[in-house]
Length: 296
Image (cartoon, rainbow, N blue to C red; front, top):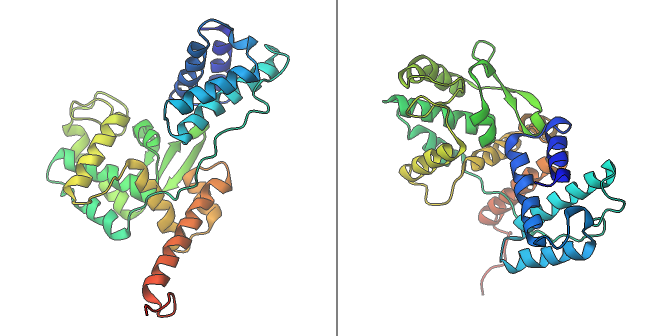
């Protein structure tokens, strides 16, 4: 690995406090560019032309525009760091234009769908008890999958009714928990977790007693959603989108939702206000007699 890339990854870890998962993603994207250069130029000898060629190469691979933009943003950050740290004199990515990403509203569950999925776990077995606690935290606290997996036993305070979450950039926040989530967690900690034979300090365990993984969580959610009879793609992040949307629809102010979600920028949270407006428009079109022209 080139020394300049090592220095950048250390910077992300030590100064930016990025998670290992995020750092690995940066390493993968920048290493792909390094391999693309095929030894013809080092990373510090690159100009704007090489970056543009790489952009064309990525687009020809028929990757999504979002994926291409993410890879190019990683390179922008890398070259900004190299310029700031004195590895290079000029930043070749300064005038690089990124592919435009179409704005799409996130998929959300209706309240009825969310409850149907959660209630499908009858808590007859340790696994069902664990799964219900997982679902209650996803929907009742709006956590990211990495945040759920990263929870430790000491992060949950049942007496005070909150969970301490470490989010992006290792920023911590305190999330209040409702009675349903608290009751599900209490049952999991008293009955299910001991039965799984704990071998980890992670809050949520797999069937063998080890810490649950992001892949494991995705498989669990997919299986539960299918069993609940929801015939569309629902991911763990769909519960986070639903949490935010249902909070706003219930009258929560956007600044509070931003804090609960752990968003650094308010603009990231504002997409959920657009989503609520779209849903209101759909209700209006379906219900109001003057919302559309009569067919002649």
